[in-house]
Amino acid sequence: MLPLGYAIRNLFRDPTRLLQAVLGSALVVLMVMVAAAINGGMKDVLSASGSPDNVLLLGAGSEESVLRSEIAERSAGIAETSLAGLSVVAGIRAVSPEVHQMAFLSVSKDDRRQAFVRGVTPRALLVHRETVVQQGRFPESGEIMAGRLAWKRLGFPVDTFTPGARVFFEDIPVNVSGVFAAPGTVMESEIWMPLGDLRSLSLRENLSCVVLRLGEGAFEDVDLFTKQRLDLELSALRESDYFAGLSVFYAPVRGMAWMTALLIATGAVLGGLNTLYAAFAPRIREIAALQAIGFGRGPIMFSFVQESTLACLCGTLLAALVAIWCVDGIAVSFSIGSFVLRVTPQVAVTGLVTGLMLGILGAIPPGLRCLLPPLPSALRSAG
Image (cartoon, one colour):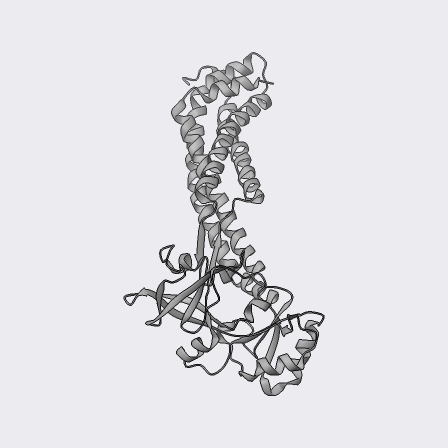
């Protein structure tokens, strides 16, 4: 076998080509890591948004979108009094009547952005246990409370929703009462306002849904209730199942992230192959001399792989540093919310495997080009 030092010395024969190889592999690995982070972040935020202990009462036929759902206002009271086994906190049953609606929000009347607005009562905090008011307080009439990533989702400045600030809801001024967090869920991109205010401003008589939190009861009891009360025209769905369906719906979006990364990576890989061809081609006579003194083609090819892998691993390290410094913690918006990119161990392993594969597979075509010519003609080569 050729010593490792031989491969290392060959790396520094041409610093310009080494830099090209490192930067090319870094670009490929970075694109793959970003795609993995986007895919994982979107999937995690949708799976974490739904609690298996929560049940949504939706309008029959609107199971795929709560925005299209409409149920009678009396459904909340009937469900609360008819169902046993609901979670109880301080003597209050965890039943949250809600209105979900897309509405325009703006910091000035000339800059309107569409926001996901949830009309709620204080009981929403009993159902959505992951929600914590970080700044200010729960909204009262004439106020709103914003998720901590709502500014990113709407494209507003980061300090737009500080407590005491004023924004416009459908051109009507409202005050910001507070900011809430619901780590890892799409609710962090929402705007919450009192249920009565949203119904009045939107001229809406019905609710979108009722969210129940189960205690000792079972989902089957709620499902049986909806089937017995045909007059209410309700359908029961676990909140976790609802968001699992949304995750399937957004699978093509995640696929597009991988496709974009693949297209960019393909161009970088082709450029990297050209660099390796240019680096190995002038060494045909040298490789023939190594064969003439007794080194087999297998050990020489292995040395090529070592050389290429070392360059690609340097690029992988560079890509990992860029990902940690520039990508980790970035909030990314999509149609129903936002999520934060994280360079998790899974993302890092994906980048490392990509770098290794680039190094191993990238050395084979130019290596074969150096090793396939017959030994006499290779020794007479001008390279």
